[in-house]
Length: 291
Image (tube, rainbow, N blue to C red; front, side, top):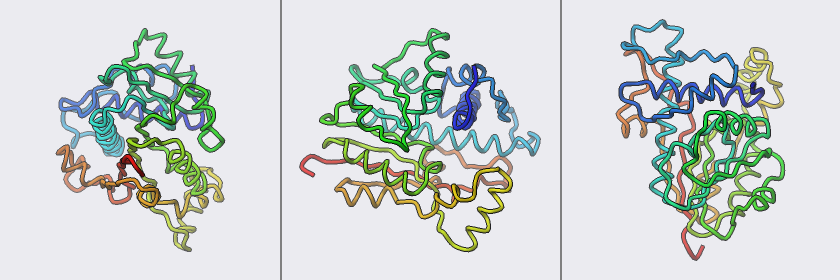
């Protein structure tokens, strides 16, 4: 089995969850993450075991350890939001190698919709079937591109727009153009009944300035990502503002808030930081009845 394209990023996220799960004090225990990583055949730089003394790990591993720490906090935060919300319809957009349908203790009758590219969805289906994993929710997986029309497809798959939904946009917006982010948020609003909730990881604020263009040109040369594609991600919509304008009650949570909540400073050595100020943070929102 193999996963290509955006799936490589999804494998790296799963590897980070597997590493978080190996900590003596894990925020997330994901028994399926390592299974998915091994089955993917994708080489990722994350170590498989959490070091006894992270500060003594080779410097080259520090960024991976920091990445796993962030992914651990992000995953736990979204897990907490979903279980506290208690809604029976959940939609995870850009689900990647998400395992919440198998590892969370969902309330009875919960239906989870996962949406990602057909190749990623097929890989997850085959791998979890081979592992004899049993979902803890009624899971419906949909192979669809969130940058193309997808709303009609999810409704045809059994999604109920007249029922409250808990939306999850985790690690997705930063990879979309500003236009596609706006279109995706519009679709979420259109499909949300009163009582719906959302937990969204923001794209980092990136303003189109001469300085930004210079950095993006350097990044494009280093990564091979077309400059125009990177430039299209600048000036993204603010999900908090979009949801507030539509009548949702909104709360904003920064990465530094999660560091305090979970007592998990984002550093390995004393003088290191994961650059939490460069991350977009999170938006949680609720649509009350009568809006």
